[in-house]
Length: 163
Image (cartoon, rainbow, N blue to C red; front, side, top):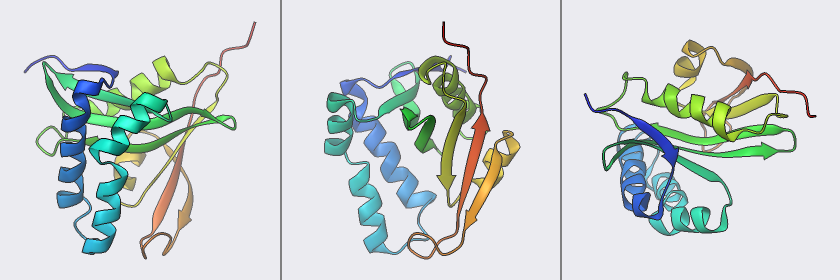
């Protein structure tokens, strides 16, 4: 198996990230009706991803094997004292290989500033995955967006003292 590299996304990665996003809607989020799927696709479309990278609105990390992007994470390293993970997706053929955990670990250790003590995310599909990784469920939001239950998870980090 080829070595996986975790790194910030490059402009040349946009098409592959958008393709993975389309795959996620077609497989993981296929329970949503077509109108909701279109909204999800628009949020992670190539033009939106390009805008995110150029304007540095959020960070996008990729898991790459050679020139192939096999997973991505979209997050904000510091937002009112907490880091946020908006999206984490791994190619359906790469699941179970540790790529998701590597993306989360890189975000936590290399991207999130030292003074941040919590990383938060929400999910409507992957609660068991985050529990397995040791994230703490802090809330359940029944019928939240588009009639789906969402779970909010937090991971405590070890902030380093400023000095």
